[in-house]
Image (tube, rainbow, N blue to C red; front, side, top):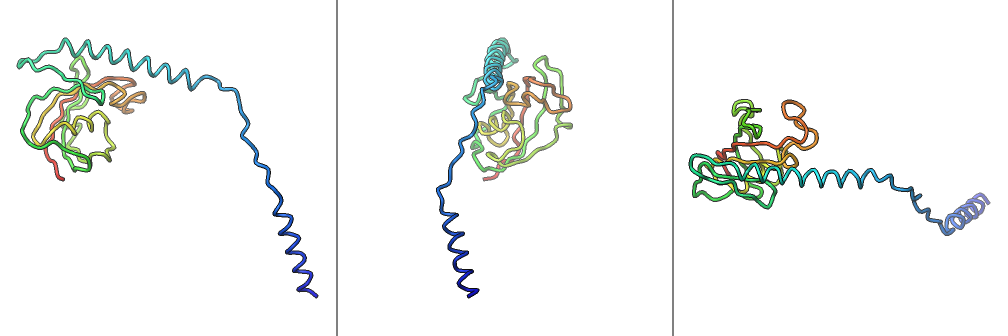
Length: 179
């Protein structure tokens, strides 16, 4: 008898649970426009920074008359020392040093302060612009980079010496590359 009551109870529960479930759609709220305004501001700020940096780059000359070349990643690069070594590639382990300055040539981080860094290309936790430049370099190369703020520390800065939206002038040396 107990088994029979239990059986009917389970069948009843099963039938009740087989009802068609109603799917509730998310409530549509009117867009405040903040996201769109923020994106438009970022785009216009990025474009004006690119124009400014292009003018700045066009006026720069060194004693060897080497000009900066723009790259597809949005940075400018000129090689101070160029070797014939193979370029670093994705998943290569690299060791490098850098000196970071403002565009007015004021030192932010010396070679000693920046230190010797290492990492695997494609899995970097450093400045995006430095990683982009390392892909263009081989072991022993030294390059000077102009990094727009959006490829450097961006809106937040480094929360130490580099403020918000600051473009950087970086002297980058690639010391080791391991496949």
